[in-house]
Image (cartoon, rainbow, N blue to C red; front, side, top):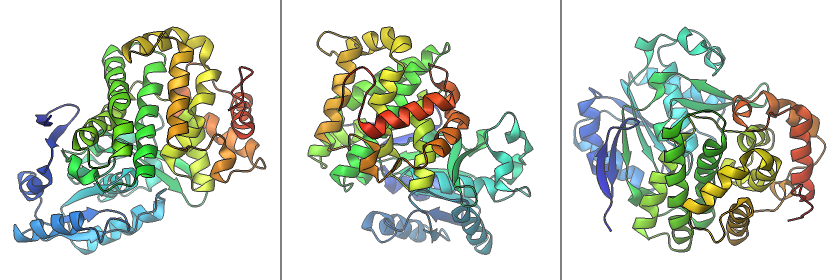
Length: 392
């Protein structure tokens, strides 16, 4: 099957194999003549990035590359990127890579014309209105992993070096103007990163589906996103050249980030501080926490899991059927069963719980989160105790 299309929801998306060739045209359509391409150090020497830069130069674009981006990006990555952007007199940003590069690229474009410090625009209340919208440069997003869905997001997650916390920087105009979603760019992703980023996409869809509130559009997108994950993630891990599986996972990632406008929950609330303090991979951390949070929320989400199990065509649709599916995926992908496997000890649980309960995603959990509840989840995920008399 061949997947291709031009979509205008939630932004303009050019989807299909080989569509990275349209990058110069997209720049020019947005009035960008001097783009700054933001990526990470792991991609900067790969042929796909060199080819994209070369195509832009051949089209007469004055392009430069900024690649000082950590896997868990920090504020210094943004401030250094803004310096590079101003030094090159750039008029737009191409955010090219996985979630970290996409987040940093978007926030660099956002901060390029702001006079207030970055933390003044954290996703708290109406803080986004403090920004000067005319100071935000146009953004093109080119995802190379199928996980975060940051290419269709209005925010970027950036870590604070001084407080060792992750913060969400939000503004409606952080949404990229155009996304080039080319599944061929994800073919070289190793099996473990394919699995970890895919579990991130699943976490987004699952938490959006479970979040309280009335948002049928987000619910429908989340359900179909999880069906695509079920249909394609194992195939993409087993055979990275399966372009149809890669395409479906790339769509699932964008769908997850679209759906979680409804909300996220404890998986992310716990994962964010763990990533900030221990520098763990975000998708992998989400995968570790997933079953513990599901059981913690069971009394509230049981009916939703029955409907999800039916949509996924699981045998005997039920909460247990969905949980077993998640557990089987984790086992197949050799996801650690406990946070010990991520290098986490039990010495900072109070600190982690205090950070988790104030994370912006905590409010979307179907069971109200408290510090005591977050600490309980940390303890269970450390011991491998799901919380329903089972150990993993």
